[in-house]
Image (tube, rainbow, N blue to C red; front, side):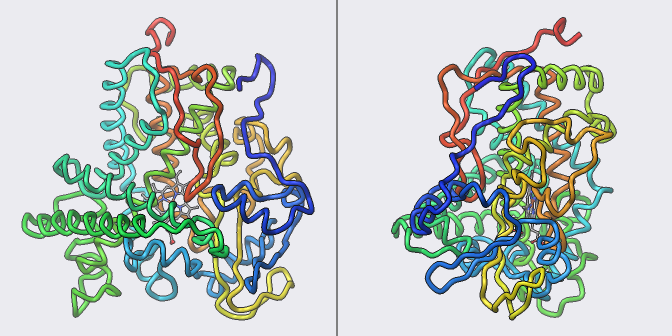
Length: 475
Ligand code: HEM
């Protein structure tokens, strides 16, 4: 699909179901693709609910209800669904992504400083160095067809790996973490995606080997990270500027804990390991998918690509980019923000009510599952003009910023993504640096299918033809 000059691009999305489609049929659709089971009216309604067996689901589909759940009444709606916790706990332990209550609060407070803006310039250096390496590799494969999803996954895994563990981690250890991680995620995906959000497990694909593979992968990752931590301990950690070093620092937030083996004390070795894995898990596939969709959208809308190329050529020239440069790439950032709107990497967020309550006056029972669905909110007829069209200029000043409870690619409120600045900076920087040197075009005949298991991505990868941009073309 490519938009002709002057024409607006409406990129691919799964067809919407007919109103009145029976709930079981919707569920079967959602089983393999979490965004395929919605009917047209879901893109028009505010709060609505449905029940399956004895489980009630409430979908918050406007700013007021999202605000109540994620901000004002977070104390009652902070629980991830039990299925999500069960799926991720073997890997993350009590890491903050799956924890709640006081433990979550402690961990969040302890992890947040290492991702604060003052550390960003240092992380940007890692991002630049790693992207330069990838650009060198791409140059040696000029005019080849590449799988952009795989390339972006490789790039962001290296960036987050170096940020968490350092750039001197031996290649084979880094590889074991990346491979173990992808085996683990695939094993959960094979088990049952719908159930991880609290939907019934009726559609479970029983695969005992998947679970075993997942446990093995988790234990490999744990062993590798334990080894890295013990090396950090032996060598002294104070000089290092990695997330793991921040978590283990002697003057860090866990320094006054009595028992270093208790995971509820940030940062025993075990707690540091769990949080390192959380950062790795939360911080690489999301950004990789964003970048992949951005390449797709730019190739399908060449007039937007030309504008982005002109911006990166003017702002970056031939220099090594800095954080200040990233802040001047307004259109590139708008392309990333619009990509996150159309293809939010985490398109469904779920919580479970601790106690009876109300959401904008509607009664909620303890145990009800609350769904906030960026896929619906971001394409909602009442919240956006031409919601399915690719229009990066929505995010360029003087256009009014969207309501922060309606545009939620990073979630919002108390559990908002801790790596939001990191991830946005990384996506803008990597796209700008690679677009300065290369142009990617869609592979003729390849049909893109939007698929959502744990995250939203093009099914089966994204083959694209890559060619280097000549210096005269870059002005
Ligand atoms: C484009 C990139 C990213 C997107 C779209 C994204 C999106 C999200 C979303 C939607 C959540 C909330 C999940 C939920 O409530 O169920 C989340 C949580 C989180 N993200 Fe990100 N993320 C991105 C990048 C990153 C990066 C780079 C890091 C770390 C360096 C990171 C660390 C985290 C952590 C630690 C949480 C858990 C926060 C908590 O529960 O308190 N994310 N992210």
